[in-house]
Image 1 (cartoon, rainbow over the protein chains, first blue to last red):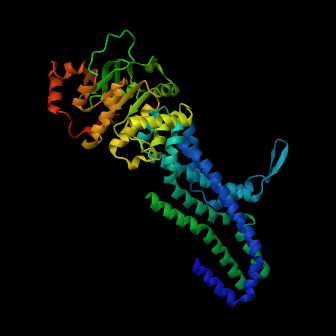
Image 2 (image 1 turned 60 degrees about the vertical axis):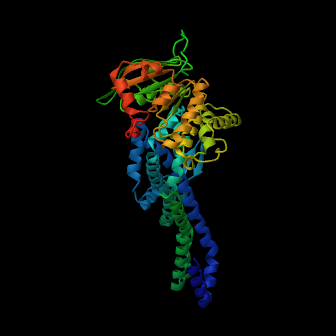
Image 3 (image 1 turned 120 degrees about the horizontal axis):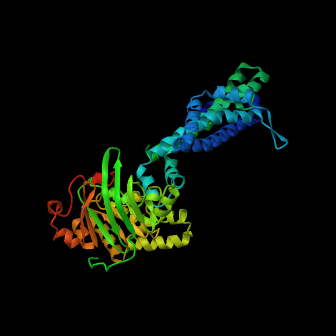
Length: 239
Length: 268
């Protein structure tokens, strides 16, 4: 990080006019980046919730609960993010009629859905693997105390899964964060889109380089801490 | 203890009749009859693979036999079809496992308190007070905040006993609870069980600790090949029995069974 800052400072010193233009664009770029954070946080949140439910469903004793979850996971786990974002953007309505009123369904929200779908399938597999990694003796032990299947999951199994899944979950989060840039391709005003706007408006090759480097550094600044934290957690839990 | 139980006209707390169970092609129980009365301590001894642990798992409904009747505390367990009914019964029966099976993510106090709080819905402060009393009883006061991984095997097993007792069970099943312990800690666990039985706990113990079984049991049952071969007061089994197999098992073993004790508890 320090090296990046040093290079940036050196460049600003050598090219003061370029730096001034770039600083002028910073609020616009920041607004775009806020959209990336919003999309990625919303996608990982929705994906985690649905993935948790799907992961539990995948291990249900009843076939009619298990089968749909397994099918969903198979279809979406390795579906390309970009394809899903295009699909949700153009296949879903721009507004939804609910109880007589209409609710807007903006493109950024469709991008959230497009990213949340593969995320939920990934998290389902992470959760399923974690549940299966808990010794069956824990189930038996909880059962002997009168815990039902769902209560055993809630109080005994899933809390033990949490620390095991954290590193994999954060990896996925970093990947979703990077994937949020794909939303620019369907016209969502996020950072990459904002950078393209700026580059088109200024029309200077050196500015174009500078502005896309800024994009790169911004994503790095967002994802690198996540990845470092993951490494630390992996070491701590020794998984 | 070894004093004879006065004749009791009440129905036994646990009653097994002609229980048959097989896992796939392997017949594990071939017609088991067993009665356990309130306040009684019954020990099941016998060679590994003779179905001892399976009998315990039938009593608390963890395994359902294919044939036969099981009555526990007034409930006809063999007639229950809903898991919820089996769970209701399990709340009243404590189970202590060979491998302790504590919940590693919870502190000692939480291990003991979680079932009364989450399953019985008892108020937390009352449950925690009871849990501290139980820790005192198993001689682990001061370990409330420790995690299972920080305790020795003997300490973990005593927490497991306290966890079972926290549900105020009418009956506690002990499944080879000292077999996974190193010899030095066996004594502390047996001492705790001895105290509980002396205080009137109804219990069924599967054990390889012959001297202990003789000392604390009201009834000793010898199983072999999925059948109960002999049963009676400890004195009759250990000293005056005329069954050559029982005598061979007891004298051949001394006080502890060597080697293969590690697999029996998970026979399933």
